[in-house]
Length: 238
Image (tube, rainbow, N blue to C red):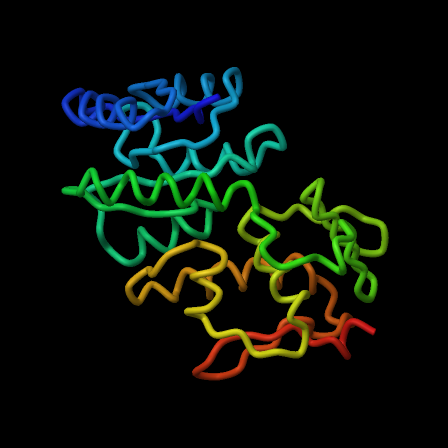
């Protein structure tokens, strides 16, 4: 079956352009022209990906993204934000709310389709690394990562991670005590060159740290290697 894509965009000409080209690429397209209707369709139709405009008539796309990512039913649906806003703060806010990608208008249809393909592929969490000799459960310290259910528990308590946070944590744990560059993490988790957008990694790492290192008494699991990237501290997890 083809992947289902929900487009939440109020400008009719852009909505039609997106719908036509994405449908021609073989996807099952649904459309909405406002935030409330878009949320309703996201909950009722469970799309595989959402393309979300920020400038909507009833609520802004940031609020839509926040609601989607805060509900267990929709939190794992990848979101590509499509907007005329190009300021860095808008990009950072979108990523902090859990968006998977950010494209500014005007945009190339070819590039958008390429990003859709990448985000959908990454949404399936391809396991090109063999997880603990094909085991689906990774146990490290007081954390347990279930690679089939995409869940993480700490001392038996579930952690509320987004898909990208889950992928980052799993990749870091599988390479514990190895320094992974920001470019490497971008390529592995997001799937293509972000052309300098390494801030994407920093934003997601910051959120991940807050969730797995909530108590000051816990060791620092994810260490920053200044000017290079990050590593998972295996000793801290013992």
